[in-house]
Image 1 (spheres, rainbow, N blue to C red):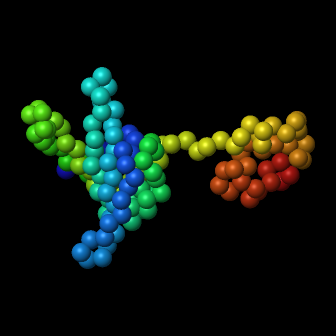
Image 2 (spheres, rainbow, N blue to C red):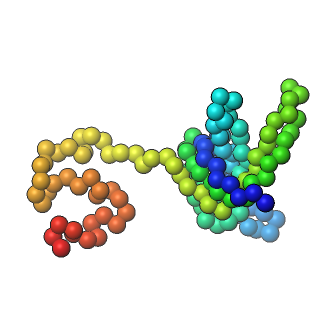
Image 3 (cartoon, rainbow, N blue to C red):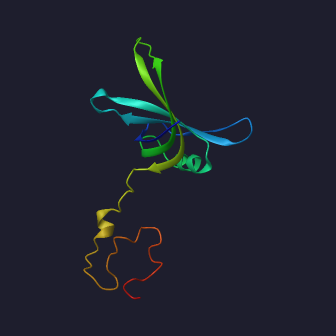
Length: 135
């Protein structure tokens, strides 16, 4: 068994399927850069609920990192060349696509301080739970 971390982009939208026993799983393909040699595709099949849920939140083109069990093999391409094949069963999935920023106009309101000042961290989870300046 090989434990691996692969980072790349989702080539297509992940597809949810259901097994014969009724358990959900997700199929995806990750396009991984291979330096000057182009790209290699890694087939991903996720069974663990956390990995399934995270993959279903993402769309084609999203940057992603997947960690799990990797199977490496080869296949015969249509042109007759032998090419590598990667198949992964991830137990961890992370999006590496940055969150979109707020428009510049919403950020700059001409305020330079005080109680109504712009807070660059206001969109983060848990923001506003504690008033650090007034505590």
